[in-house]
Length: 321
Image 1 (cartoon, rainbow, N blue to C red):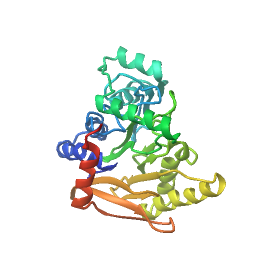
Image 2: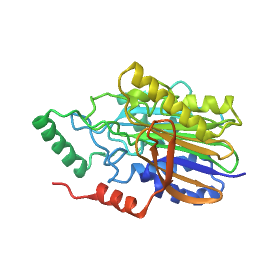
Image 3: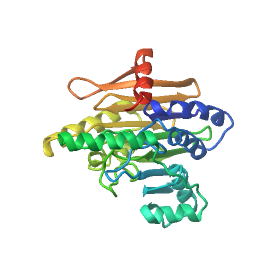
Image 4: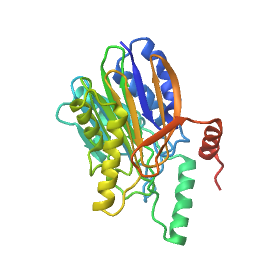
């Protein structure tokens, strides 16, 4: 059986590369996914996930994460959790041990994590704290809106036994309102997977993604149209919704989607520049950069250039004042 993985953003490359050994050892989709996302959560220079994630408007890091087992459709998710390392592991534990606690938030999520022995950690780094204070000064001086970027790590895994898993992790919008929850921990919006069909995940402005339940819609159409290429399905789902939201709501935020069938076929769609990583039985991990075409009907992508990669490293590690 062929295995495969697709994941959002350049930041997941090292995690995917590390996980190749687990694929070769026939590890489960869930364990592989957890390993991939933990690598992102633990890296302090990724300012949108885990340790080093940017705080809310009160200077507190609130984390969201979710896990879904494609075999039995078990889901676990946490939202607004503070001062606990690796929220993806807490979400996975929920999926594996609880039936009536699919989504735990804030204090309830923290109590569950403490009771089950998960590691406490101050997730606010000095670098993130400096970025917060710089943003406070900028907002005070210019009255700019808070950051509305979209850098959730979302991952779809197909293991060598044919099982699938989906997962997400994020610190949410920089300078968000305390208690704000986006699409990432919500089934059908930020993620969805069914091992008999495939899986999808979203990253972007959660308030817009939730209006279309886009991850579930991609999987639903993959089930209804088994012979239609995944790339065509995911482009149509995203760009039809993009046009609908622009017409009905007046504007649309950045949205990117990834998907993989249970045979390993994959696709990606985005209405902004978007990087992602793919690896499978026949392909070493590769970083791609995607962009929408001029009329927002199709996504074009290619392998990231050395210049793009060098600029990325320089940007995320540049010194702050």
